[in-house]
Image (cartoon, rainbow, N blue to C red):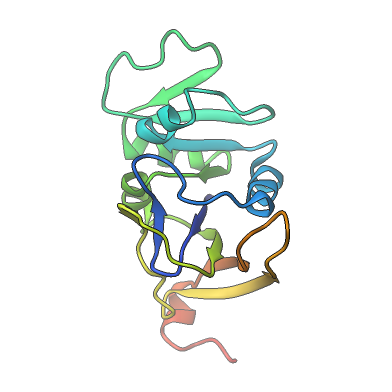
Length: 173
């Protein structure tokens, strides 16, 4: 299966100049718990924004068009095409963590979205698509109030793609 894990502001912003425009420890904790022990896929720009660090306890794959990228980074796997990643997703779960170009490439293949919505707006130059409620079902939501360590009210949502029967109206509410 393919999963997305990301945080966004109220306008769908996910980044500014290659970085997160906010600091939200609760989201970082959720991200770690969700991705730990799994395979993470990200684009080259996202990997470089993380200072080319491999996160402990997770397999890291970078998707890039650069043929020889990352050969000097032990433990890093580099793939170049959507079919390569879809083939890998047949044998293991893939958690896609960004950036926007990678989300766009896999938008039609993603099965589950873990989304943190920060209830504020930020200056962002990178955005993610809106979820179409005709294609997705919200299956879980947790709301967190602003606190001394988490300066923004936010909610963590889990969305599951509806199958073809559900999209046709075959699902009883």
